[in-house]
Length: 465
Picture 1 (spheres, rainbow, N blue to C red):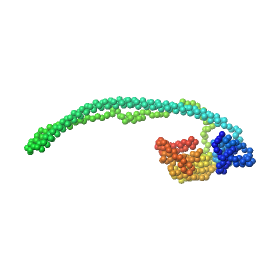
Picture 2 (cartoon, rainbow, N blue to C red):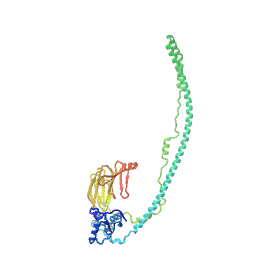
Picture 3 (tube, helix red, strand yellow):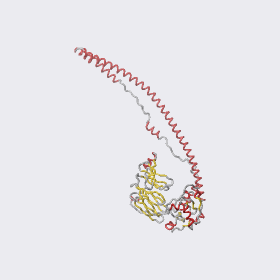
Picture 4 (cartoon, rainbow, N blue to C red):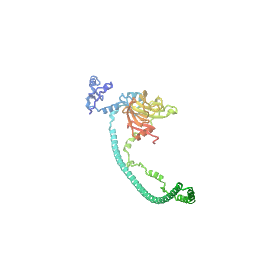
């Protein structure tokens, strides 16, 4: 059942939007009242069966059925043939262009009676069971990981506790010894200070006496005072001064290392490392998926196709993508379209070296020229480049990739530490702000690749290893 509003498919092809009222089970598409009346009037359509639009095939399933029946090369053509030589299904146009020499081409209708989805369902059930077991295994591993984390924290806590206890013992011993030695040295300093203060009082007393004689005495008394000072006082004070200088305090305290502390701290900092070990108890068990399906899916060599020879600077292949019966290759500043059946190669030269290449849809690839910061949207038809549209984004990017389901561009920023999503006209739809680690990774990324199926960007960062 479906309650979602659907539009008439024939009218949509004529670029007119009308709400569908019934569903034609023969055409497998929703139609409006006017198109239903047309069905009744046209002889080849008059026996088609209709059902209520609310009982029609769900829109998602309808679109899936249409995609299954559509040729992968010619979107508007229906599949009628299958070829076991190439392992592909195709339309009338493909038959004439690529499969006339094949000796195992059959009408799709001739093989339908021998085909059902039982094997596929059995295989999917097997994979479903495998996925459930894998999820159960991962849940166990996740629980183990928490236990390991707690155990590591406990070990580190005990190590820290032991280190702190030993340090507390060392600290107590050193500070106790420091207090005793400080008392001894302080006593010596106090005695020395007392002697120096006595010497200073004596100097001040004699200095005051001389000043009094000079102020109140006559010349004879000044003369006699001078003789007394030179004969008796100066010698005595000089002897005291030299004695005090000889006994001045010279002791100090320093913390002596009985062992090299810095290397010890370095060794302590690297005393432990975490090591990932194999904890899979089922590693040696037989894998039923491999044993059941490998025999029919082993990769094997098909053919060699020679590429044109260019100069050394133009010879490096940067990327490639599969487009039906063609392989699109970025080589230097050229885009090569290789027909794998006819060994025919079409080339297109750009202004600078081609970087990343990805498929946006069945007939469009996205090529990014990093040096000129240009995005090239290249359209194909039967292996020929029919149109090239340039986009000049404001920001510079390390990689630009097409997002197949959305028809948009995902762009890895050169220096902003962001990932931008663009429309086909180059306008930014969304700017994804990243956390510090991801932003650093994007900035240092050397090469990028995009997994369209799983919507994942892979990056290699030489500077970050």
